Image 1 (spheres, rainbow, N blue to C red):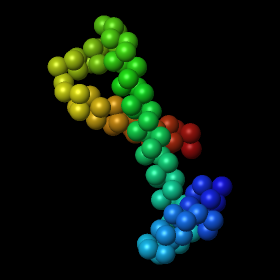
Image 2 (spheres, rainbow, N blue to C red):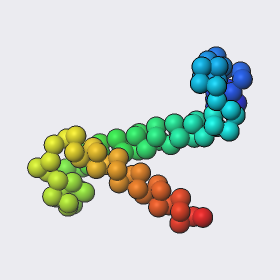
Image 3 (cartoon, rainbow, N blue to C red):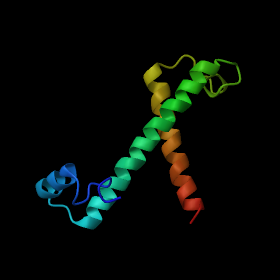
Image 4 (tube, rainbow, N blue to C red):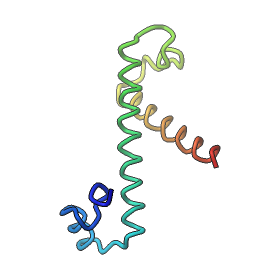
Length: 94
């Protein structure tokens, strides 16, 4: 796990540790935030892809009248809604 997290066994981990002079706690927090953002990005891209493939009048872009929006605005909406959902789930599960 430490190699995956950029621990002492990883060349990237050593480089980041030497360059940024991060302590272990900060290194772990940075890794968790990185994984969180990658997970949000991949999930929201899949969410957008499913909405495009579905193309029914009941999909979320049509339901919220977003068919006139640009592709970038719809993708930003995906990312924003997913991050808010993750944060709400985290607070609810406390």
